[in-house]
Image 1 (spheres, each protein chain N blue to C red):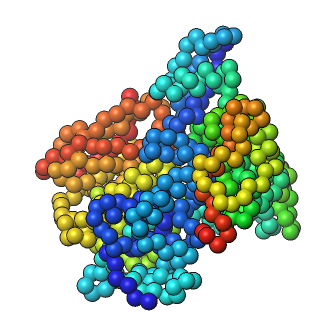
Image 2 (tube, helix red, strand yellow; image 1 turned 60 degrees about the vertical axis):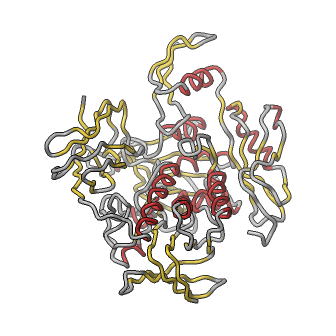
Image 3 (tube, rainbow over the protein chains, first blue to last red; image 1 turned 60 degrees about the horizontal axis):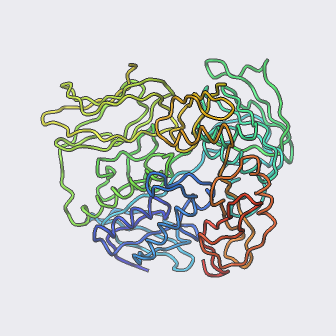
Length: 418
Length: 123
């Protein structure tokens, strides 16, 4: 089938749904939202715990509730939503439009001609293959998100004696979930000297159940033939080398991995979108447009967020920019580089516009106390300054900076000790 | 008495230094908003938690209905509540917000559906 639209949004998770609604609000009617799953909502559907929506809806919701608010808006606005449909390719056409190739059980192979594309594919979990744990390759080793889907969607408990590697939020949430469902969670092992997830999840998912958290430790061996039987846990020295003489063993039948997320950018790379090696998401301008004109990116495929509220906010901004692009109203502006200094792991976008304020997202390299974040121009004009009692890599900061003055060559952002 | 707490109300997770006697909080430091005051008081004298789990649903397009407590409940009861919910079988269709169990284990909290589940074939 062939079809012509103004925008194709790839992925109907929180980012894709918010971008689609935003496009509609900005007057763009002929849009197509595509998702490979049989229901919209993305990862939210399996995140049955609460804590979503505190910023965006001003109330605490569970994942499925948050998703349903947006699904209702998709339905109300009669946005064309194709489920069980997978985008396999995006092609550039000579007239600057794109052709999006969609495979669908119901509709077969489809070539969608579109003025703009919104990349909203989200991210996927790092797996055993990404972190190279030595040992045998038995069953019972899976990512925390896989276990979450098994328990919360399909109703299977993947194991009874559980060790979790990595203290990311999904791992912590699953420590509590598996405990509530009758499993014995023996330990959470974290490579870094600080937890990867939010403090509140350490309290309510580990401390509430007396689950030990081993910081600066790793799993140095996995044993078991058919099923995992045991892991060897080793403390790490300052060079992150395992101190084998101090290692100990934990018996288990399940190992969950919560060792980070990678934006799912295979489609983006194929069409020539350039990625930032730190975020592994696309380089974007302040309109969230990638270096390929007409291709935009938002949500976890752009940068891994810790709060869905910020995904919705980012996608809304993205939708508004896409609407301008479609109407040929996206003005070309003078952009200058935004340079990161002390302790700033990344900042997004990587450029700011002369004569305009900007919204920046950033994360620090490691936790620190009593730091001041400043944004200054090359001629020392202060655009932003705020003190933080505590900063954590697990908490993304979102800041609004003042109008960038004329004749600025570059802007720099840094943390400084008070 | 003194205790260090981490507030669980929002992602910021403020470190709280609390001083208290048998009946009340004497001093509180470290909270960046007033939610920390309520949290410290509850956490010291009668800690509460939200419970979120799933209940079996029959004839629905999915097998499990996600549910939550309508308000935070006594922390020591969370496991009992999850077990109690695992006993029920609910018939689709269910709407998000429907009450599944009223006043569970006399806590005053209801168990509420958090997803709309239509009948089989109605995705």
